[in-house]
Amino acid sequence: MDDAPKRWDGPGLEAWRAWAPDEVAWVLTDLVVPWCVVGGWAIDLWLGEQTRPHGDIEIAIPRSCFGAMRHHLAAFELFAVGDGEVRALPQGAPADTEKHQTWVLDPVERAWRMDVMLEPGDADHWIFRRDERVRAPRTEMVATRDGVPYLVAEGVLLFKAKALRDKDEADFNACLAKLDARARAWLAQALQLAHPGHRWIAQLG
Image (cartoon, rainbow, N blue to C red; front, side):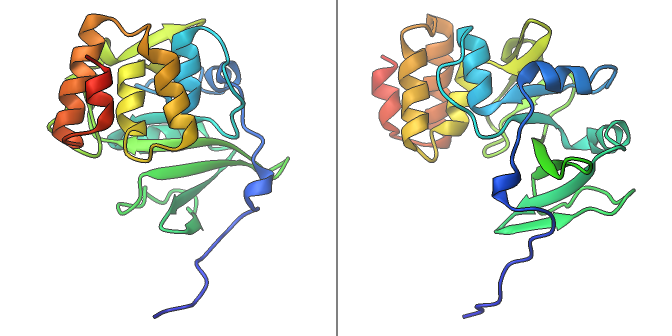
């Protein structure tokens, strides 16, 4: 067994001082690629209120748009994250093909500001990274609140279904009564494909 420590470039987790959704939208002004807030903040945007604290903020973009995003964020440092590693991406380097997370570091404050998820799909099509059989028009999966695009609840919950942490269960329970019939049916079908027999399916009715 290899006990060598994993590589960790940049500051530790205590340096997470994430932007709020409106700050992300301001930083990404004029970025002409499809992006949206995902994760817990997307649930709160969908609900229209903040329901719990958030230690970070995640957005998603198509992997093919990484270069444009990198150019837009030229004032920041980017790091490929995954498998216990946080690896600095040199200026001009392409995205790590083996990883889907990129952390954005504010070099002045030495603070992590945003987690960028690289996903399949394009400007017209949203595709679930963990099972590409699950897909939909982007117009059905991304909504906007106060100028901030976000993944709708059924899409976020599909990602959260894998880990089922306490916060994931809390997010599901917060959304369940507010999901309309179409969203419930879509999520139940997607769960059956990606996680057959998942316990949320029965709760979706």
